[in-house]
Length: 274
Image 1 (spheres, rainbow, N blue to C red):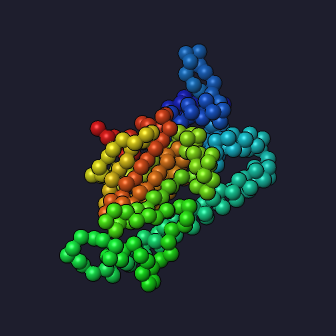
Image 2 (tube, rainbow, N blue to C red):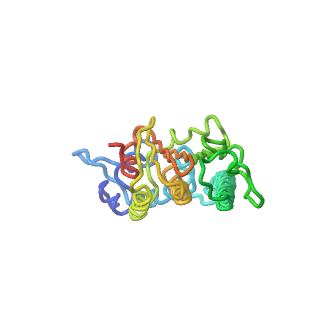
Image 3 (tube, rainbow, N blue to C red):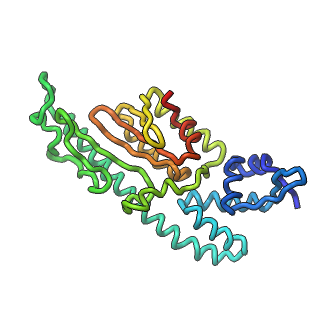
């Protein structure tokens, strides 16, 4: 059977060598060793990685993938199907709930723009008489209570906080799922390059400040749709990132956090505060 070194397997599979080592430490991938200590993999590792990647793209946790890999390796397709169906159904329900929350938030933004456009251009300072905090006729529905809390800000402004994290409806353990997620990206090489380029273009020129476990980027509020779409897509392949969006008048504050071993990836995508 053909043996592949880690660099060869990374090139053939499109999975970075750092991720291959992580999969090995997590028990998802096994490797032999040469007398000199180099890792060696069989050709079957390519199919195994393809299965792991497909399972990650479905949002499955590393633990679940580990159990499914054992079933997949046994070769009983019907058992793999039986194991996948309830897990995919659960992820689908979560995704639909998050989509509904994001749709409600989008509607509230459209309503806010409609109200803003209908307001007169006053020469004086903003105050409650401006009417912006109060929904006007035809305004879109407000955000879902647990997804985008709204409060009136200083000088009649509006602040909206949105958390884009897996398991948003479970406030305790589920809300911190990103901390336990594997620090590995399921996108192939070209996909990672394209996503990185999109992030760098989106946050170019943003003001940066350090926050615990991550950083905060401040951008014009007009970038909210672009940033929200990128953040939602990013969690499909890198669930170890935690995204929080805060709308504050003309500003959008994006806070991004990652576990300690994901710090290098966070800096690569979003830059540093230096």
